[in-house]
Amino acid sequence: MEVLNLNDKFSLFQEHWTPKIIGQLNGQDVKLAKLMGEFVWHNHKEEDELFFIIKGTLTIEFRDKKVKLKESEMLIIPKGIDHKPVALNEVWVLLFEPSTIKHTGEVKDKLTKQRFDTI
Image (cartoon, rainbow, N blue to C red; front, side, top):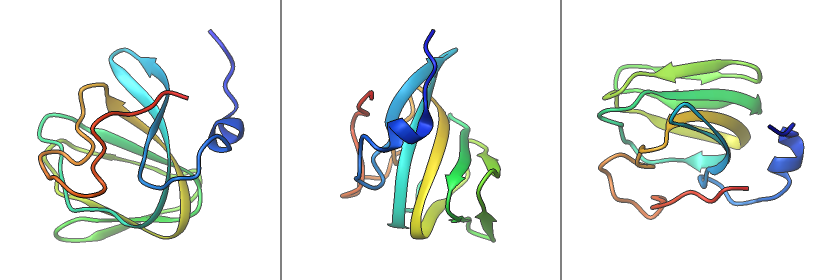
């Protein structure tokens, strides 16, 4: 057990759309990410995904609507739902995802990461 300071962890990286693992919990990775710009349309066929906004405002586009998340708000995206996060300004986000999740599902893109670093 160790106490983690999220601001300290966020200070360790600058890149966008590159989640960093900060812990694990019952088969789930706890990740931090900085987001800016548009991500790629994708889904996770077998995994739900939790977005918790630490700093900034994130819009998550779905095929039929857009959801805007502000600081201290969260959203759980059920498995199989197409989505595309969009950040007009830098957003800091905490993610809970199964350790087996693929970054962009079955979509291959220049933003796709094959593995996640631990910080």
